[in-house]
Image (cartoon, rainbow, N blue to C red; front, side, top):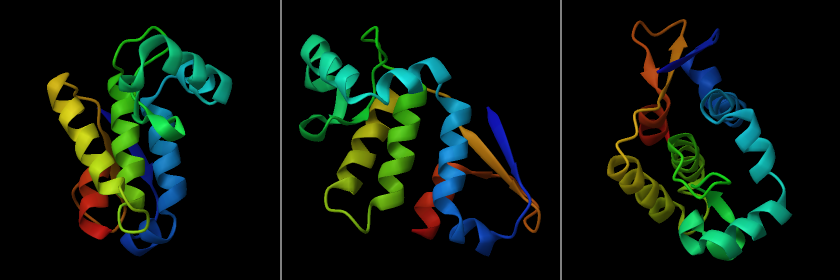
Amino acid sequence: MKELIIECSRQEVIENLDEIITESIKKIVPKSTDSYISKRSNRKKMLEKFGEKAFLDPDKLAFPVMNKNGKYDCGLIYAARARALQWKGKKPGYQEIADKAEELYKEHNCSKKTHLKIHDIKENLELLDLLQNIL
């Protein structure tokens, strides 16, 4: 379990949510995986090699959930759910993507999580729980 310590209030978390999600994902997804999937050409190769199951939105090559070796990656699944939850009320279909990511997370017995420690809240908050409750 990773913990991201944030020195701000709950309101500041809401105001800076994109940056917080980005930092949380950096803690969950290995740099080598992140640098590989950040290139569109590599995502195209993954689609050709592993099929649509490599992405939660294969038409857009978005929300990759497999690493370059074709294995489901719990960090990528977690990241996909976090990003989908972030945009669920603003972009059509994102709640469904979040739901698919949650199913994969459970199916593959993933346990990766990011906890946020916010200075004006006594307990640590799990990022995905926070996203579910504030958006």
